[in-house]
Image (cartoon, rainbow, N blue to C red):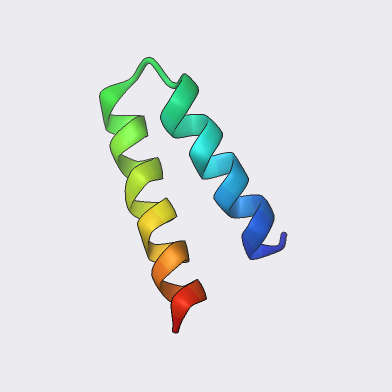
Length: 39
């Protein structure tokens, strides 16, 4: 799976998930992927 796809999935999870813990995990993954992308 490409990083772009993972980013999109994480973004959708953050937007759509009703579970705060799941959103938090997706947010962390999203941030980590973005950081990796920038470097």
